[in-house]
Image 1 (tube, rainbow, N blue to C red):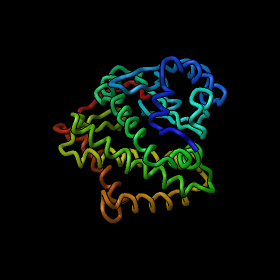
Image 2 (tube, rainbow, N blue to C red):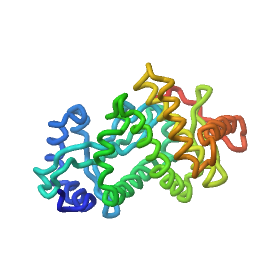
Image 3 (cartoon, rainbow, N blue to C red):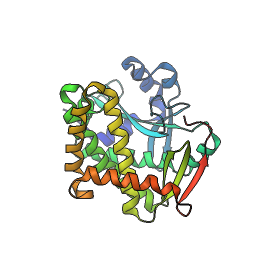
Image 4 (cartoon, rainbow, N blue to C red):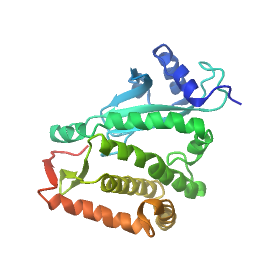
Length: 275
């Protein structure tokens, strides 16, 4: 049984003087390749310390993604003996696209600020729900198996509705009022006129991307994934979209992509290559 809260332990662990030891723990765990571990840096902003990696490709983030909080399940007793269970160590991954036009678009999205908000929420959430660490270790997309894929989909969809949606709403209130999409070999910035619509569009994009990742992981079980995914989105999305949430989300995304043809709502960026 741990003698300290998760947040207090996080602040005790994530310090500049512990960076070398943390890298050794990650090397022993083989969390990342040695080059990536070598790039991990420490930073502190507004009393929040964090570890981050500036990467050049989407190997860890996935194509089209430029920021994420990646969780590592590690043993930290050598640094924090008061924490005896597996610890969830979040690390921010950030990257810039190579294409200058796409870089201009991505920089407007305040991606680092978005991920730092997630990190703040995570520290509070795990203190209130300590079982999150073991659930994440077992049911996250990266760690799930076909046998527990239903619980995994429940877990990942829950994260989008409970944890992503509030941060997206905060993004809008902080001035980020455009949704970015790619189509027709170009990137588009769509101006959105309400917070609710902004969150709806972004949640739809997140859910669509998550669904594709499950299909990629279990390509021989497409029907199973489709059925489980529909059930979870309809159930958990009811508070946001009402009945038949998945169908409404699909219509919402179709509406979003149609807006790329509206010159009053959309700005087109000619991109040489998506990375």
